[in-house]
Length: 235
Image (cartoon, one colour):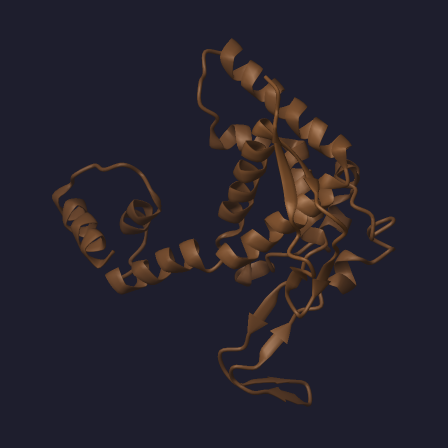
């Protein structure tokens, strides 16, 4: 990675135009050192893989119990591909992903029922409390995400709620934090989830094998490992 960063920096100084990617963007638009760009790249790639995988597990769990949502996601994908073909396009783009509103709603609804684990990297004093460095801190997002005054029937998986939810109430949704500390990998994580889910539902029907239920300990996990059965979709 160091060699690639240094090569990109040399090419940038020579005016060589390369394929546009995150590293190239940092090289052109920031004053980050090579070490800082490596830290940013590693953080973007690795920091969220654990939470993204757990979010996918939750999505499998909820979607397996909500076939109507799976069917609507499939219909949305068919409409998107049909529109691309009619307009001479081929591969799906970032704009197509952002325009897949119901898929976005499914991801948001899944995240609403998840949790996040954060570590404090320095001594923190909050009111009369001192939190030592390295202490595990759990943000109680469920207090906001399961608030009945914001989300009607908060314990129900209902991706359709996001179609009519006001912007004020959407502000209570913060699985990636907010403000200056908003997770920089938010869009990457959501896109990875969308790609995986659409690849799955396009090619397979799936169902849970036996009863299981998500639990927090303190991170989301499944008592029985959430085994699922896949069956190829008939063409």
